[in-house]
Image (cartoon, rainbow, N blue to C red):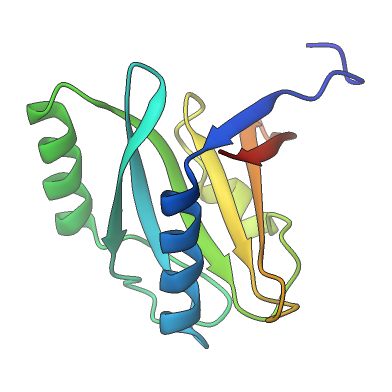
Length: 139
């Protein structure tokens, strides 16, 4: 992909609002969850538990992840994205976020609450350690 070209990621408004609400409810720890898609469009948000219970890292509980992935597969959907929040930080992936991004086919979304009055959602792909930002368009 040409470095000047920024891809656009469509996110339904109700999903964006639910991600932000989840981040606000879990603060000061990082919230996390999984997004499922049908035919390339986000169809469902799964809130998950942050097994790290940390304000600076997240890890989706492995048993919960298996359950969610199973439900997504049972519906004939696909894992579209993994999201988490940065309660006090900017919406940029940390080194830990990049290291833990093991699914190159999905989007990694960050909900930044650095400015609580104006939460920000950013999307990234992590390919071979390289971070590619995708522009989020709330539909």
